[in-house]
Image (cartoon, rainbow, N blue to C red; front, side, top):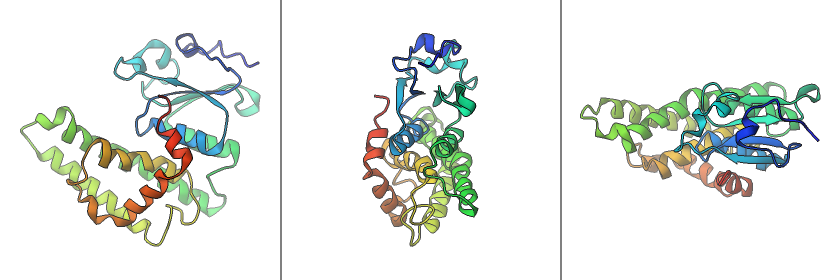
Length: 231
């Protein structure tokens, strides 16, 4: 049985199954990337809910795993060379899990193209959609100055246009193959229109290809399960 006692996070969230990958997360767009990925690849894992409202992510135990204080993070008891591995940043975790299992990340030139779209989500879609959500639904909506909302609305709509063009005549971002590029992006697009309620702002009706892609993704059983983990 794996010994995870060297990881302080296990004191606050004990591992009932220490031989399984330990996931520390919440049902945020970044958090569900990893739960969806784990459901897709079928790797045994144990999920621990990080209560963001209670500021669990800023506890000393969580910060010992991710000094940036953001979900998700993992501890894999069976990491490289058979040693436990602690890892944070959702994009890095997706790449690690894909390489560990040989799933959802193609080889050759397609590998780098897939990674480019993962980084596109990390660098553009996530930050811009998140800021739009803040200024549309949360604290920023009370600001008298509406220029930040206008800025993030414009940029979010532009990014949807980039994704729309990419999905022209494609089922998935990489074409016929569903990959970590889709896993990384699905939760953010869903959040934009469902949780943030920003569909009218970004003219969601114009992006038929993105709508169809999102519907295809949400029909996947692994995606449906992953969106609810941890509960």
